[in-house]
Length: 390
Image 1 (cartoon, helix red, strand yellow):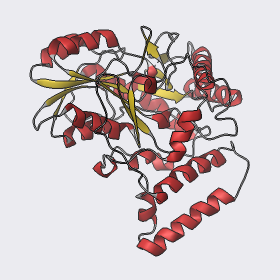
Image 2 (spheres, helix red, strand yellow):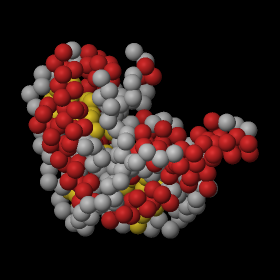
Image 3 (cartoon, helix red, strand yellow):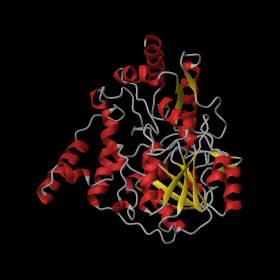
Image 4 (cartoon, helix red, strand yellow):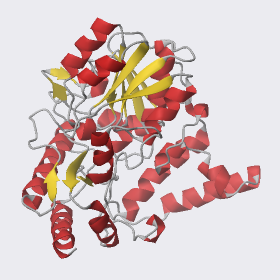
């Protein structure tokens, strides 16, 4: 069944703006990757990755070690830098295989390590490996904006770290490049213009309205309609002009558009990041994760990818390994369950069996802070009902 035939998800798959989104305990003891060093706030994680590749100083033909289990959006920024992606093995538990990395490290310039779903790799070991082999380490924290490993904030292990703030905050666009080891003075960013600023803020408000998190109001939608009319009058491009105001990464595309390399995140997104209540985000994500874990425990044909939730992990989503994904995917979607299939498609040429199985069999369900207790109960009950009936 084509994805366009599925109904709208009954609960939001990403955080949506609500009246209480910025309220609650801030808790400075909870680490964020932006605590790790110098920061540049950009429009997406893939733009941050491209900037990291530029900062490393890759030359055409250089090799970059990347995990065989990956989002398709990871590879184009590396290819655009003129580098060759070399895929290393990821085991069935989503851990990086250092032996396989060592076998492929000859001639490589950099290594990308991914903290899948918010759960850190053995970052100290990967850091030590990179130091021994003269590799620049890029820590991919797109799934792990908050958290720590061994008492150190995630994002502090790599030469560079990249993040995706729009996975953790109620914003329409946002990413970050962080470095605790190198200056980012040469990363010079500017605004993408008033149209971008307006669309980024209005789109976030619209999603909050769509899911009933904000009081019904016509003003934001009227402003958005007025903006589109102005664009059509000025540029004559209709919807395409409106779409070009923000990067395609905000609309679940895998595309890489180098025109966004020198653009900073919107003022709206930067303000939300600044005033975000870390304590509330951390507590709600962990509580929702554990509620789903308890409710789905023992469900036939479905098991958590990670057996436990460590103390310093604030997950992006709740990932499960599904025995028969083709049998339950469409029924879940038809029931309004938002199913995240990270790495559903892999870059051509990947031949790692475990990564291929993870790509096919791992489903993830949202556990973000803007889900209510009632929505978590609905999500768990619906998953149980669908899986039990399928």
